[in-house]
Length: 151
Image 1 (cartoon, rainbow, N blue to C red):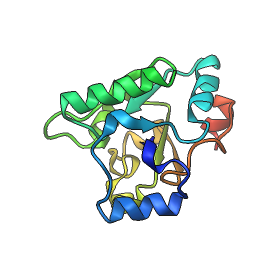
Image 2 (image 1 turned 90 degrees about the horizontal axis):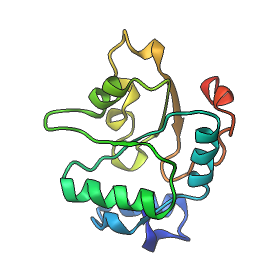
Image 3 (image 1 turned 90 degrees about the vertical axis):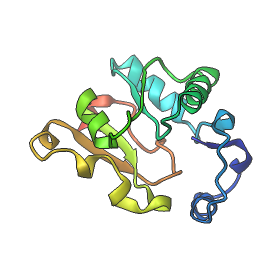
Image 4 (image 1 turned 30 degrees about the horizontal axis):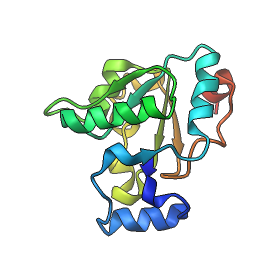
């Protein structure tokens, strides 16, 4: 998702805004990137269980994200977030998805900020990692979840 004021900007322009700390904290005004909702709906129709992982940790901000998911018709799925002292990898290990789709965190430090690289080595073989460009969307990923799992 991106802030609604960033609609129409290029991916590189959005990355620059985040790096310059011009990113707002107005999470309630986030919008889906390109065809993300349609892609997730296709996966849900195929039988995927959807989990959303947000960077937000404050209750009000998590509620804002939950509202955005509902408002834009994202398919039903659990919204996961970090508890105090947790890393993203802890959340992923708790959920243990078959496939973890995450962005490359380019604007905030890259791989060091990602989830999959920090998952315990013994659990990594059970999770397929699919990395997309930050703010680039997931439209290029296959509708077919079995194809996604071998991406």
